[in-house]
Image 1 (tube, one colour):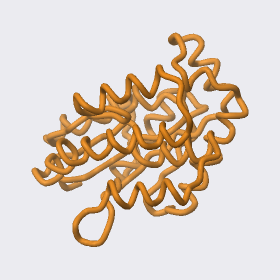
Image 2: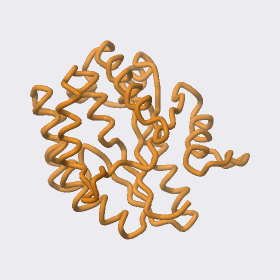
Image 3: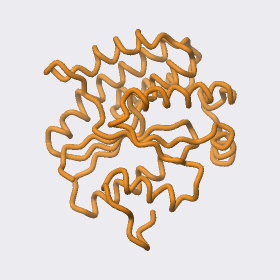
Image 4: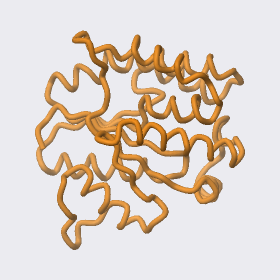
Length: 215
């Protein structure tokens, strides 16, 4: 796998993606890659401030979308694009697919508006968009995810939403995956950790994980 690759991890809260993205970063570094591990909302001082507002303050769906795209613009311009230009592997815990899933699916906000924001914010200067080369989607039933979240931490504003909201988020991810099937790899996250890690490894490295290499 060459450098300068952009990989995003997606899924509803509680799907387990954060622990596996850390394991993937370690595996890539062990192979000699320079890895940038980052997240959205967030990833820069400005975007982290916007993240705090986003997760704690009440607001409507359009305000949510504007905040996350504002943070994303700063994140792309100051962190992600320079890292890719330098040949690094960028691992991002959520990216634009999350906006279409949470604000588009969960909130029922107009996907046409989200697509316009995506075009403005992620223009690559060559007529295309900056998008991940690979998106690993951790798909998990919302009820299972809710049990995991309750056992792990106090809920933020979005995590306090009901199961119907997360059903819509999950459906939003499914629509994005169907629309860009070459970029997405769906992982069944309702499996033992080592089985999930083996699937992640296969998705990224394109070969089965050898025995004893589970994360």
